[in-house]
Amino acid sequence: MLNHHQSCPLRTFNPFHMPDNMLHSVMPGKQKQAYRNSRRFFEGFLRSVILSALVACISLLAYTFGLRAEGFGDQEQLNIPIASFIIKEKGSPKVLLEKDVDRPVSPASLTKVMTCIMAIESGRLDEDVVIPKEATLVEPSKAGFTPGERIKLVDLVKAAMVSSSNDAAFAIAIHLAGNVDTFVAFMNRKAKVLGMNNSRFTNPAGFDKGIYLGNHSSAGDLMRLTEYAVKNPVFNSIARLETAVFIEQSTHKLYSLRTHNKLLDKYPYTVGIKTGFTARAGKCLIARAVKDNKDVLLVMLNAKTDRWGVAAEMFDSVFTAGSINPAMFASLKHGDSVDTRPFVAYSRSRFHRYPAVTHRAGPMRRSHMYSRSGRISSKHEVLVSRKNGKHAKHDTLALRKNGKHSKHSNAVAFARNGRRSKSNT
Image (cartoon, rainbow, N blue to C red; front, side, top):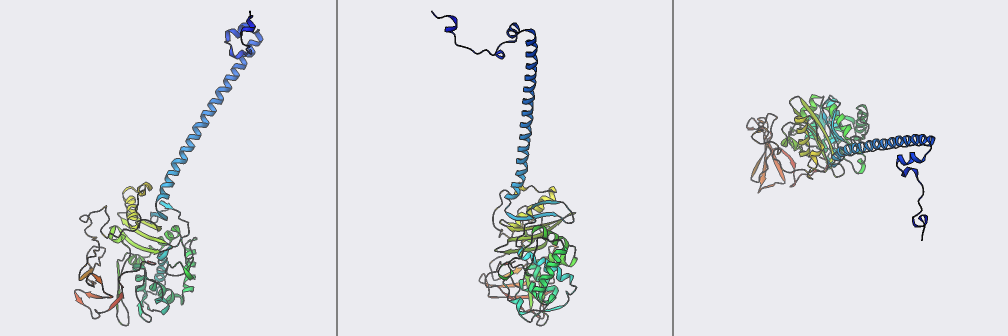
């Protein structure tokens, strides 16, 4: 028969597994006091460890959620399908929304803002410019000048700003500086003076391939240039034009050029300024809108979405809320809208003073030349002939003054060839 030690498993003695009253019954007095002290120390240490761990966990969670909250805003901005942009009120140091403002990219025809402000500041706008052959050999978009024609410098500025005419930009450069390279050097010098440290110009029109490769700027630099340019009243008066109508000084041939800026039709508070496009640069835009006491400027580079709709949304947000929420652009569609009706947020009845340009098939179309007051210009009215709903090879543009044909009403402007090139506009 087994004794007690043989029938029970062997257990290691552990005083901490025993109740306090049992420990006190088996311990001498000094050991009891030592035990109490050690237990107090152990419990205090354990509480400190738990409290420290809890504080660390709370701090970590707060830091993590903070990063996620901050990253959400950044991600929302990054989701806007525009490579680089900046929007702010004119003259204010506060930027309302921006993305990659210092990133050097091709600005396409936004380059012409520099070309035109330099021409305006030259003080030679009344001079006749003899169109050099070199200026006529550039790619579209072109006004269609021929070598030897005499055009006022101010009219070349209008052609470059309004219809983004590359031949006008080159003619300006050659007339003011003698050759393109010298004028480009002046452009880069001016850029440095204005603090455009991320910009380098290779030509006055905005070409960015071939011998002109390397023409670049940034959204931040172009905002500096724009804020500088809009201080000039002559620049402002030209930048907001929807059409540029002028004559050649020798033969009095008429030129009538229309803007590429569809924002003027879509958003009633728009007052210019410049559009741009090349295959490398994508769709670019410098826009300005004024409402009440707010004057807002926007620079947009390489937009892979409807730049007109985005610009209108941004302007509206500033005018109504004073700020912009990037989340509003989460579902932007790709491609510029070809719809020329007013922006969907507004009814025609509310903004009847700014009707859209309509394009209808028929024997004749009126090319609307609305002034900023909304009325058809009484001084100039352009009639564009159409045959069988298609453009004739050479559209005849007639200038009418006060309802009567002018002396040179049979002036031929430019050939359309069925479509208009979108290169470098």
